[in-house]
Each structure stands twice: as C-alpha cells, then as structure tokens.
Image: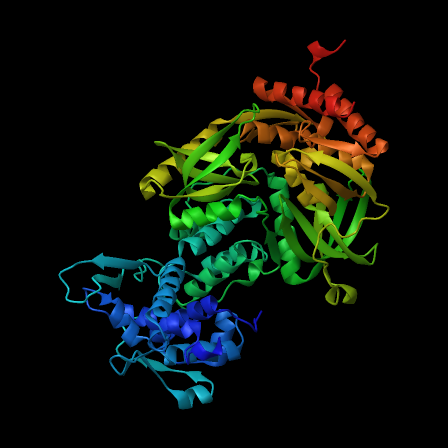
Length: 319
Length: 317
C-alpha cells in the first residue's frame, strides 16, 4: 500500500535502494519504482531528488547525474559521477533482528514445516536454519491447505465446527483470510448461517471440504474487522490478578483498568464472552493468575480445575 | 530555527555524507574535509553546531547499518587527527545472496507479522533494502495469509537495542522454582520458539537461552561493550537447543473427538508423542485442555500439572 509520508531515515534508505536497483537494472519508470518499493510516485521523486542533490561542494563535483528531463516525464535514469556507491549497505542489526524474528515466527507455524524457501532465506538473513518443533497436527495442516486452495479459487467451504461452548454445527463459509494471532490460526470468513463475517479457530474445525461453489456476493464486499475477538455477546467483566510472568493473559482479551505494581504484577478487568470458557484461560497459569471477582467467575475456574484434576488422576490416586 | 535552515533536507545530508565517505581515499576523510564537502555542514554558523550535527549523523548512519570507522593518526597534518571512512565490507553483499520470489513473499510476510508493532518500521526498511537487489514478483499463494506476532514484553525493545549496539545488559530473571537473580549478559539474538520469545545471550562464558516472560525487571543497558561471540558459537548454541528439544518427549493420552484430539492429531488409540522446549510452559499449554489430556510420561510433567491444578484450586478457594 503506498504510503504518503516518509521520515528522513526512510527517505535516505529508499534513496540508497533506488541507486542499487537502477544501477543494476537500468532506467525505470517512477510508477514501476512506486509499485516495487510500495511508496507513492511523489515519494519516489523525492528520493530521486535526494540522489540528485548529493553534490560535493568542496570539490565542485556531483556524485550522481540525474536526468531531470526524463524524470519530469516519469522516468528515473542517472549515472554515477564521482560516486562509489553502487548499492545500499547490508541490513542494519535492527533490520536483521526485525526480519529474522518475523521469519522465526513463520518457521514456528505448521504450514511452513519443511518449507525449503523459508529455511534458505532464514539462512541468508541469519535467523538460523535449525528446524523448530511445532505443536500442530497433520490434520490441521490439511485443513490449512484446503482453506488456502479455496481462498485462491474463491470457492465456498463446508466445515464442521465446535464452538467454545462445545456446541457442534455445520457451517458454510466463504473464506476471506487466515490470521495467525498469538498462538492460534483463525479462518476469517463470511458465515452463511450468520450472514456476517466470523472467526473460526482452526483447531475447532473437525472437518472441512471445498465445495467448488463460487463465493457469495455478500462475501465479495464484506469487510473484515481488525480483531479476531470482535464478536462477544452478553459479555461479563471479570477482575483478575496476574503475576509478572503471567501478565500476557491481558493480551488475549479486551482489557481495561490495568494497573501494574512495583513488582510487575498486574491487576485489571477483562471482557469474557462465556464464563464456561474462562477456566481454561485462567487455569493454565497454575495459580499465577487469580480471579478476584465476580464470585461466579471464581467458581467457574474452580470447577474447571476440579474437573481437570479428577479427570487426570491415575488409577492409584482414585478411591 | 529557520535562520539555520539548510537547502539540503536531513535525508539529502545523510545521503551526501555517505557518498563522500564512500568516495574517500583509503586514508579516509578528516572532519574538516567532510565539513567542506557537505553543504549542510558548511552552512552551519558555528563549529559547535557543525560538530553536533556530525555527531548525530554518525550515530544515525551507524543505526542504519553504514559502519563508520575512525582512524586516529597523528601523522596527518590536519589539526584534527581523526579520520573517517566506511568500514570495508559494509556495502558488500555476499556474491551468493539471492532472493527469488518465494523468498520475497516470505520476507514480506515476516515484515507484515509485525503489524505496526515495535520492529515494524525496521522490518519494512529492511525489506526496501532487499528490494534493491532486483525486481521479483511475490507469489500470490500466501497473499491472504495474515500472521500477527505479539511482542509486547517490555524487555523486547531494550534487548533489540542492546543487540544492535553490542552492549551488555542487566536484568532480574525468575526461574520456575520462584527464585530470581540478577543476570548480566550480552544479548545476541531474539527468537520465537513454540509461541514464546527467547533471548539467546552470553552470560559469563556460556551462551544461554532466556525466556522473555521470565525477565521480571527492567532491562538496564550498560555502558560496557558486550562480549564478542562468533557466528559459529551462535550456531552451535542454536543446534544445542534443537537437540535438547528433540530429546524432550512427552507421551499424552487425549480424549477422543475432543478439542485436544484435533489439536494434537492423536492416533487411533488416543496417544500422541510431542516434543517440548520448556516443561513449565508445556504444562501451561496442556492445562488449557483441562481433562481432555492426560500425561503418561515424563513423570515430572505429570506431577507439575497435578500440583498446578492444586495451585489453581488454592487460588480460587
């Protein structure tokens, strides 16, 4: 998406990059450069002028000769004067950290398991090539592949879905996007039974098929809300306490009244769709997250833990 | 403000400065050479203003990956003996550095994953630089996929800074047994493993892994440079972690047709083997499934989860 504004650092970076590309591949149209670098044509022209204004006033010499007439016609062409600059510098450490961490993140996703191109580029960027273990089932990878194909073909899916309350249903879904947020995959799609965009957690899809029927009109024009958890109805406000290490729990819910004490412990309020599902979110932190109120929420967590503990008892533990 | 306004924009100044330094002879340029060559410096009224501007630009260039070297030699006739040049190799991309369209798509996804958070700007500017290596069409295959990573730990930014500046940092780290201690380390790399950010860092003589979640204080940067670590040593430490994870195997029994069943892809008889990095974190992941998962082995994990349930009950009595 073209960006209109650019700061000095990014403009400098863009100028260096344009030098590299044009000296390598020859004259290019500003439109082409705009598309390639993802900036507006106006910004591309500013970057080219930055290159043009690189005169060494001590020696009365210029580093690059930019063809102004051609630039006015939308074409970027220049030759190197005294410049020894031929390409941009290698990635800075921060750029490397950013891209390497992003690639690392991708490598941890099931659909990139065994992806040769990913391990090549991780090697090049220096984020390592060692495979990272992945918590994902082959079934989920198949689900992803089916969805990806339907996304490309713009066809409808039929899925068996279990919602967070354990209720099963068959859904006809026009897939719009797959999000991976935090640690989970979500299919964002137009749900025919709800006539609205819905998020479906991939690990709750028990079966999925591509129908080869084309997308509905409604799906074509649907807007996808930014947040995957944007559809809470009848929500309950729950006040919780989390130790420093467990404070990430607040990232998973719409949260308010956040307060951090000197030790780094956090208290605050979260919005929860159903108390029935609260238990699992709280219990995973083994007491490091505590529900303060309301009483019904405390009881819901207690019941979840009791049920889980009894269910996980080995025979010798039982009466 | 406007009295000192230069004909050159800040970007133009940085670009000209880079060009002058690139075109410099092997012995580099003196500060006065630079002040005479770049119009923005020449236009500054006082020497102090020139110096200040140059200091800022030097640090900006270094941050952008233009490695400046200072050669100090009194054999030059200039009153100012320091000479500046660009470190050899800082513009030399490896001959075999090639990016095809699949690579570019993955890099774009990696940058997109930052989703306007902390390192989003650096990821985007890195991408621009890589695009100068040639026009490649990114593949359509993944265009509808939107990964979004979360790096909201307060320690992330100061650690990324310390990696960039190769500085020592200090922080308090709490182990799972509840004990915490102050660590002084040289941060080397931030990695995302099994849904957690992990810092690879050198502490004393050893390269260790630290979970960002367990850093329980501010990260304090030190003025001292970090300990140098070779790429080979980093590779070795990463390989050691992989071996460690490969040998950490849990056997689980999963309730048929439950969410856990679909999540882990259990076999017909309901058992599944899973590798894990950190027992305490893995226990959390399993506890989310409540009664749907039972741990058959290792025993330590089973006991950890059992006492975890007791802690939940105690906290909600």
